[in-house]
Every structure is written in C-alpha cells, then in structure tokens.
Image (tube, rainbow, N blue to C red):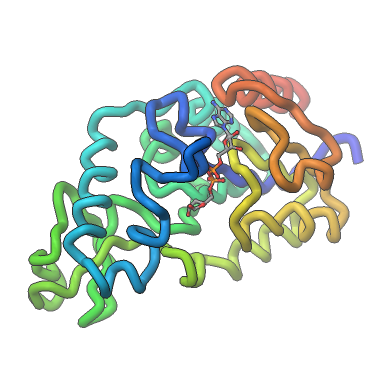
Length: 235
Ligand code: APR
C-alpha cells in the first residue's frame, strides 16, 4: 500500500521529554525519586493516600510550567489536515497534546487534570491540588476523590475504541514510548496482524523495536515534524 489513509499514533513520555516532563524509566529506575509501586498502584493509594496525592499534585502543578513542543505541534497539524481516519492514543497524563491543538485524541492512562470520585463514580475536570480531603463536585462527599489516572493493575481507558481504530489502521506509528507497558506495547502486533505498516520514532530502539517495519531514532522534536511534513506533502 503506498498511501495509508487511516492512521493510529501511540505516544508516550518521550514526546513530552523535551517540554521538561521527566520520562518514567530513567537510568536509576525511579520515577521522580519514587518507586513506581509506592505511588502508582491502587495498593499504594490505600496504604498512603497522602503520599500519592502529594505526588500527583506536584505532577499537576508542573503542567503550569511546561509548554507543548514541536512534536506535539506537528501531530496537531497532522490531525487538523489529515483527510483519512486518525487517532492519537496517548499514554501520557499531561495535557500537552490538547494544548497544542490535537482533537482526535484519547488518554488511555487517564489525565492529571481529571478527578474520579470513588463514592459516586463520577469523573470531572480538576485544576490545582487535590489532596486526601477534596470534596466531590458531583456528590459533595469529602475524601473520596482520587486522581483519574490508570495505575498498574488497572484497566486502561477506551480499549474498545482503540482496538477498533487499530483494526482499521493502515499505518501505526509509535512515538516516544519504551514498549515496556502492556497493553500499549502490544498495539504494534495488532496493527501488523491486520496488515498495517508500522513505524517507530524514538530516541533509541524500544523493547519491541524489531516488530516495526520502519524505525527512526532521534529527538521527537526533530523526527516527528520531519515525518509529519512528509505525510502532509504526500496526502
Ligand atoms: N524524543 C524521543 N524519544 C524520547 C525522548 C525524546 N526527546 N526522550 C526520551 N525518549 C524515549 C526513551 O528513549 C524511552 O524509550 O521515550 C521513551 C520513554 O519511555 P518510558 O519512560 O518507559 O515512558 P512510556 O513508554 O510512556 O511509559 C509507559 O508506563 O509508568 C507507566 O503509565 C505509565 O504511561 C506510562 C507507561
């Protein structure tokens, strides 16, 4: 197939790295100086909700200090101009894709700017600190609002929609993700199974790099605009 119409793009922490948001799997194996199991599991939240809230409150506050970069902007441009189906599936909980203008976007691991009430099951947008004493804007209960983040051991959001998009995909592109966390790490296999072409753009080969038909290694702010320009020139 020379000209794919339907594109699914998976993004991970690497696309936001040059905006100043740290990736997860740094060389020291820690995430912002914490072990992942101390802050990103439902068990951690039950054990020490104050610690988990402080951690996510700090990540949420960080959003006010960073800006989308050229890679987010390029994907927003592709989204606006691409005539075929397109879906950006991000594992990131930051809001940099939408602030760059992306519309055909879903957050499979939740969002820092969203809260979830465990008492009434409502989800709502959230600005500023949350803390263990937050009141639910829907049911008013105090102390039952948690970050609307998909933690380890929890089911990612919108899997049916993602799988439907992958089934129709002619091109699957993975950007800035280490390929360490399932189910996102398995999307390339689904895409290949339905006959889509697959492209990886990352700083270095990911864990599943050999599964990709094409691999481009470099900084997202360089490689993503380059790829988007070529796609839009060919449309
Ligand atoms: N440009 C492109 N790629 C980059 C850049 C950059 N400037 N900087 C780093 N990378 C690459 C790294 O080489 C690495 O392969 O981005 C990848 C980031 O990998 P991770 O830190 O593992 O992040 P991600 O794949 O998004 O993690 C998946 O794990 O902890 C969970 O739920 C969390 O959504 C997250 C999931």
